[in-house]
Length: 453
Image (cartoon, rainbow, N blue to C red; front, side, top):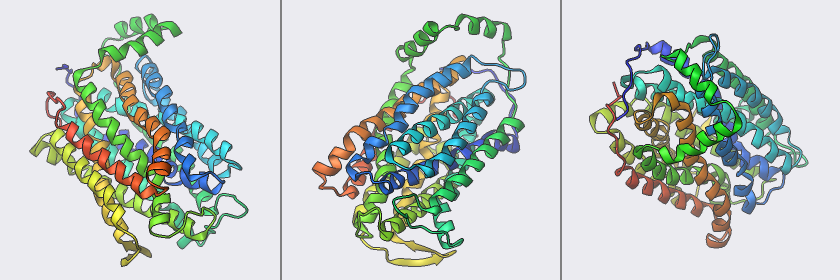
């Protein structure tokens, strides 16, 4: 078991400041997740090719995250610290990409901007995971990841609702004109870019970082690691040195993220087809379905924000892996249950938004999402060497992006040839993968000191 030196216990507001940047990061990430397939389809992409176009996102993460983790491990500036330079640089480029994305004139341009956007988000996001391991004593690490999950949920709720807000409240046009992106989506991305930059800047300028405990040794290691060949050997060599817990969690992450990728790519098309009765991306019904999927995504992210404060309590009462297994099982069954909903029967109206049966499965998905963002990282942090926290957190995200690449290559084929073009069946497959991930979680070794206080 990895030993950790005792670090100062942080106050609630210190945890708040160091995590607030994730509000902006998830704002951009949620806009990407909820609207990218819609943008591709509006620009003329075929549904069978959507998963291939989405490959830009995971391939970018595969290349960027371990490199950024390695570089941030070997960075120290007396003013900017270790991780914060990467937060800020990523925020600048993500803001530019968020302004460009809804102005794409063709599918190839949207795919290119997706590469830029996802790379920039990864530059900001990956060091945030290591930031918790850097600053927090093990007794606060689960709370630190839970605070991040709270801001992830809050940012995603607001971002997912923005197209509906602009359409229903501000009466902005939600109709694509001559194949262009609707104004509701464009304005949402503009606001998202500003929020991303402001929120990340808040953390950059209000949070501090602990210097390496042995600065002389750190400087010596940094000098020794200079050079492309040395860096490449260390990055690749880390695979053979992965802790046992990390290997076990890799299998859990693989099936979990196949489920999530199916959710993000195909929910819009699935709901448009099975509930709104259309697959024509130029129709008003399709765009209405896309807006409502944004509302559904807001629900699951809102649930995750609330669940972030409950999960540490459940983990303390049981165990972190038991808590994660239960959440994944509920999420998988909930995702698959969308297959049984075929109409938009309104149950109630809240703030002008129709509450329908489509929202109920999102409660279970939200519970799973909260655990996905918290428990694997809390379990992993206690098994990693502090000096390579950023690198291993980046390497761990290989097991987030590899399943997304597999999904990008296969889900389109499955949807077209095995499921007869019915994307709702792809969501059922995703639900089954998440349930399998729940079973695999039970075999994970979590020997680190409980960090749920």
